[in-house]
Image (tube, rainbow, N blue to C red; front, side, top):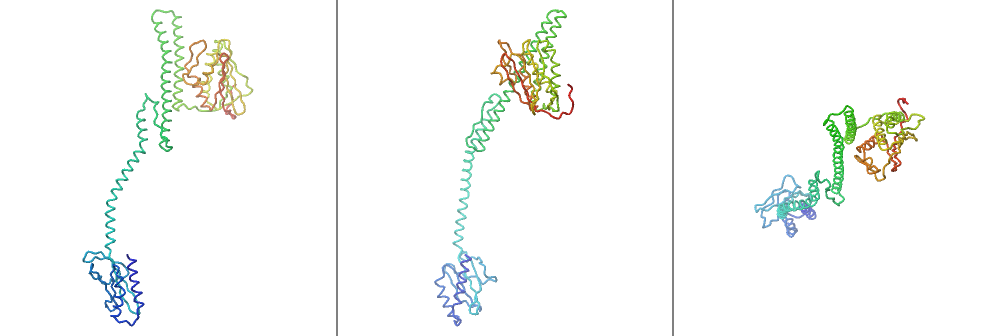
Length: 430
């Protein structure tokens, strides 16, 4: 609107500049009237010379109000309202022509613009609530559709307890974060189910293993107390009770060790250990047992000490577990050999025997807790089934790999391969 009013003022300035300077007041009025009567176009125009004479004034019957007086500050559109409630925009400016100064004022009705704005305002008030309601409805429906898989996951997750750990949440095949969430939850449930099953198995097997020696002890004591016995009979009973107590003690110690291992609290402190001296010590410790069982226990010859980085107590326990297994599963007249060999940066500890061996189907499971391979001739297996599990854990703590070779009726060979320690800090006692 300001641009149109400014163009009208420029047009009047151009018209006045083209007129001859000799025109009198009336002639100039006539020229202006002839020129701008047909160019009204809905605008108001007023031209006053520097003496205050009105040269031209356009009056519209619909708004028969005079244009306000010339403002002190020209060149700016000024709004005003007529007495007939019409909204106008008023603009004034000074122009120079033939040495005279003229005051040109023009105005334009803003009623149409205000009507458009008023209609737009009404439409906006009507449309905004409708748009907001539509957006809220669409957002609600989209969120329900997007979150329905989450609701199904939550429903299934709430159904899972210790009695139905095999249930899995539905997998969403959308290749997005929800699909990854469902797959991760199922993987977590797999781990929880495995751990829960392992705990149940451990509890059941431990209860069974402890119940057997306790029943034997109670039976022996009850029989001994029923009737008077000789000193030799009491001694035999006490020896049987002591044997069962030793078995229970070993079982409880293994259970505690494995429990600490599972909890991550059984960390071993590693330091240089002479494996050759340790094997020699264990052979001397088990020689009486081997002789009592008519077994030939021996070890290979060492040219020089061989060192590993380990925990001496843990390695002793590892050797005791392996020697106990070898003695229990090797018939009288058999042999057991311990070897320590170094090859480059690796040290191999091997325990080989001429025992009953391990069946091929049992080999993959011998390091599982409470797993006991069946002995030939349908005899019941001996031991608690925890020794080799503990031995495997000890090997893992020493970063050692384990290999087992066995043939039924020919014997077994357990190999533990350790990293060599090349800079011992203390001499060995050999």
